[in-house]
Length: 133
Ligand SMILES: [Zn+2]
Ligand SMILES: [Zn+2]
Image 1 (tube, rainbow, N blue to C red):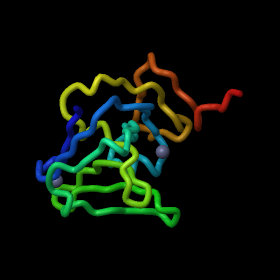
Image 2 (image 1 turned 90 degrees about the horizontal axis):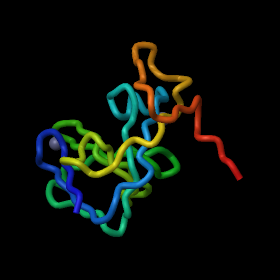
Image 3 (image 1 turned 120 degrees about the vertical axis):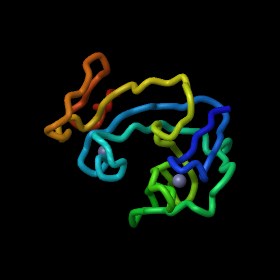
Image 4 (image 1 turned 45 degrees about the vertical axis):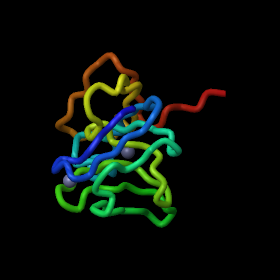
């Protein structure tokens, strides 16, 4: 079981299974949404995800297509990504301990902040990962 929670500690969650597809997106939208140099995000199995406490404190910010993020209305931590209220991924910064996952790639490096230097050693892509068929 992997657990996580927000900065003030009132919202906590858990889910079973591994985090998948851990990635960091450096685009200007993710920088704003995650209040950081980039997103750090991984997918979860929605069927096993559940809120342990503080779900009533969650605020959602969704786009017109129903995709968005949920964050703590008290402390502002961005906790998860949702599609129409279903959690499909979590922000790695709010995961507790060692979730046994590493960022597998950096995307939208072409529009990263001027002040960021990305550590070498992990694949970097100017935009999305190219689709290879
Ligand atoms: Zn909080
Ligand atoms: Zn992005």
